[in-house]
Image 1 (cartoon, rainbow, N blue to C red):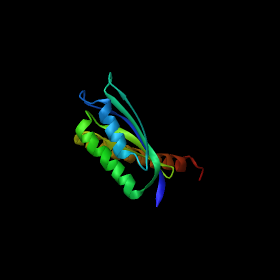
Image 2 (image 1 turned 180 degrees about the vertical axis):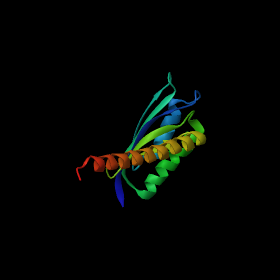
Image 3 (image 1 turned 90 degrees about the vertical axis):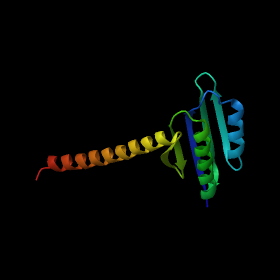
Image 4 (image 1 turned 60 degrees about the vertical axis):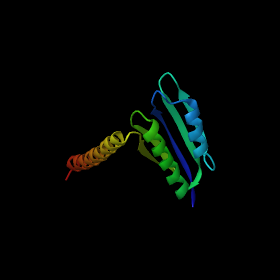
Length: 130
């Protein structure tokens, strides 16, 4: 099944990174995806957007390709925005240790959100007249 898929974000890249490296990445990701990218030699940043109607296999291959690329060129972790069937999520990409820490931060954020929702529910129950 093919779903509307989009992933986008900005990744800090090593100083040796060149525009030609981004072109090679875009060529690997393109077809059937649409790829937009921009590079900034001053800030050493790659901006990337991949979108299209991709199968689950193609989505997985896209993310694997980005992860492999990041292992070679990223100088830090980055959080990319991912949207599948209108359902937004985040994908940490970059140096392995940074990805682990970003994932842990996301887990903690979800726990805090759940705790705050529970707290709001309890406070609402306390405010109701008996």
